[in-house]
Length: 57
Image (cartoon, rainbow, N blue to C red; front, side, top):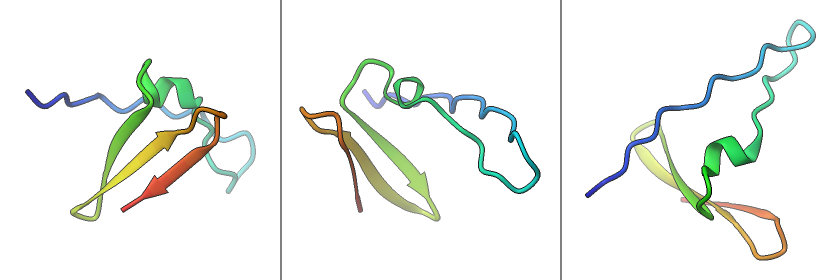
C-alpha cells in the first residue's frame, strides 16, 4: 500500500523574497525517508544516523 502524505503548510516568508521555512520533522513524520515528486521525477530525502539530510534522484 502506498502512503500519500499531505504536504505541510509552509510558514509565511518573513521578508519579501525570502524562502518559506518548513521543519524537517513535519516532512518526515517519524520516518527517516520521504519521497518528493518534482517535475514527474521521484527524489528521496533521507535523514542519516548523524542527523544530516541526503537528497537523491
